[in-house]
Length: 147
Image (cartoon, rainbow, N blue to C red; front, side, top):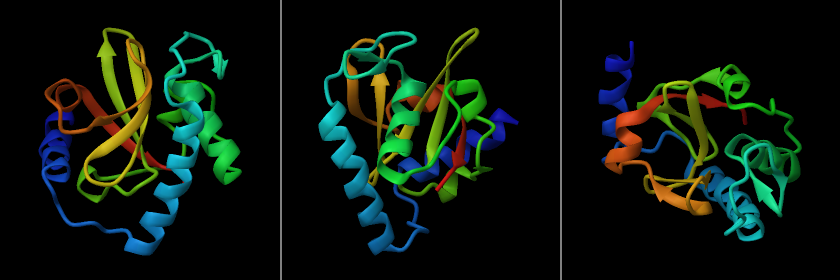
């Protein structure tokens, strides 16, 4: 199944068409970037859920709760079951993207426009990164829509 998902993911990050209305996409991204400004540089801390330190799933949970009033589960594993599955070719701003980063470790981030996503990086804290980078592309396992 993973082999079927990856080609679509590669198409998305290489510039496939946007399926979300531009105005809605822009409004959602502005809200996400407002949260990013608040969280940017916050260090990664496993189990953390505040500006002193946050892990990836808590960052995503807090952004959706604080900016959109949407409650999603606390853990990456449970977030992977939230909302509805999204075809990687149909990603929208605000969708959650999931990666297998270790044998038993997953990672989650939030899609922005232009092939970017924001997340709580273990090494750099809360940052914006490129979905199409080799590291993320090779580890992509799925996407969910909660908005």
